[in-house]
Structures are given as structure tokens and as C-alpha cells.
Image (tube, rainbow, N blue to C red; front, side, top):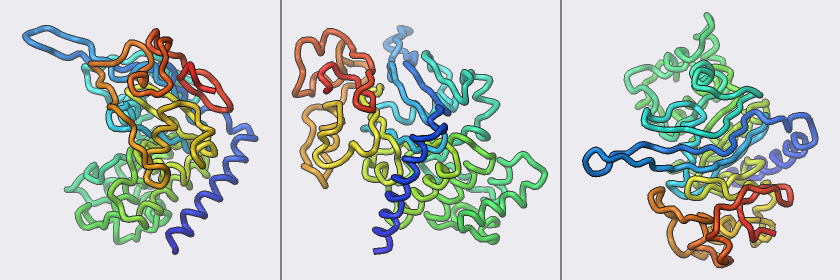
Length: 334
């Protein structure tokens, strides 16, 4: 019962905050990603090379005080987007398009300067914690001021971590405590944009509710939160908008209110099919498979699996368009 109450409180708080954000000056974008493409140079047989494009014309934006959830199946480009924003892609990656943070271009030099301070990552796995260093010291290492220890203890108190927890090693922490340490590490530098990469899979329901509550709290305090997840249900608890990825691009961005009933308010056929495939809805599987980067259709990427497809769908890739308070990449969207 307590878990259900926590979820209900999160949803009610989210509705209240969303009205405040959408009606005020906080609509200003903190992060804008437009037409982002990421490709990798790969060697085939012998010394022959090929350019493998894994993200193409991807669009998403995040406002201060807002949670934007990115959902999609494995291989849709969710984590690659996070790595592109942070500037931690491998050396064989080629990036094109536009990324603007806080009104300025997010160049390689700027990424290095603000990574870990203004833009911070909450990684998917607690294995990112150094197993040979006490967790309090790990958080202190991310704080650049002279009072790092005092600041670390203040942050630990904020996330219900005792003073004694700071002298523990990661293996001595419970799963919930380790997740809190990851959040503490991400916010210790005063980040304005938080990227949470798959923060909930495999966790106990109480820990899931706690983790989501921490992310919602960060948005309430003015941070922009980009939450990458497979779990639409978790996204719906705290997100203001949901961006749906498919085969390396954005197919729809919709306000959270549109994810309801039978999904009639949604715009893209894939988003509607994804919604209906959830166990709590029709539990109807989506026929076919997401294409691999090496075998993408020439037109709409979802066209081979779409029940609405026409000859025009294969003629070219549709552009992202504004529709009913959201964005969609589909010529048949209404």
C-alpha cells in the first residue's frame, strides 16, 4: 500500500509541477538536440571500411525543471544519445548535427569543461562505483571546493545516507544505498542537466519508487532530467514528456497526458503499437523486428512493420513535424 501511495503522490506532484512549468518562463530549453547523426567506421574483410550510421536525424529537447523520458527497444540509440551529449563516444565515432546546451553550442571543448559538473550522468549499473575506494571519498572527488568533505556529508544527509555510510566500500552497500550514492555523485558538482541511464531495471519496487522520487526532486529544484528507460510505466510516474526512439531516430515526442486509455491521443503507429503491447493494455505483440543499422529501409524506418504503410512511405524518410502539442515523424499521423 505504501508503494502505491508513493507512486500516486509522484503522479499528483508531477501534474501540478507540469502546469507551472508549461505556463512560465521555464519553457526555455536547457538542451536542444537537432538532426543528430552518429556513425562508426568499421573494418570489413581485409582493409575495407564502411561507415555504419546508428543514429540519424535524431531530435530531442529538455527544459529546466522538466523530466523527459526516452523510451524504445534495445538498439534504438538511447544510450548513444547520452554518450554523444557527454562527449564520451569512442574515437571511431563521427558526429554531425546540432547540440546546444544553455544557449551555446555543445562543442568538444565545452563538453570536457562541463562534463561531471553542469552535465552529469547517473549510470545504469552500480558497478560504475570504484570497488577499491570508500564511497564518501568518491563523492568528494567530484566536488571542486575546499569543503568537499562537508559538502559530501550534506549531500549524503539529503539522500538519507548516514555519516557512517561514507566510510563503506560499494560492496558493503545495499542496492538502494548504492543507487543513492550514484545520485549523490551526479549532483555533487551542482549539475543543471542530469542524464539517468536505465535507473530502475532489476530493482525492488520500493527502490524503484525511491529512485524515481529522487529524479523528480531534482527536476523540482530546477534541473533538466533526461531519463533513458525501457520501462514506460516508470517513465509515466515522473515524466513531463516522453520521446520515443526507433532504429536510431525520434519518431514521436508526446506529453505524458497522451499516454492513456487505448493510446488514441498518440501520433505515431509505433508509439501506439508500443503502448498496446504493454501487459496492462492489450498485450498485443508488434509484428516483425527493428531493423539493424546495416539494413535500414530507404524510407520510413517503421514502414516494413506498419499496418498503415503505403507506397509513399517507402519514397523517403519523413521529417519531424509539430502535431497536436507534440512532434511526430509520420506522413499518416493525424
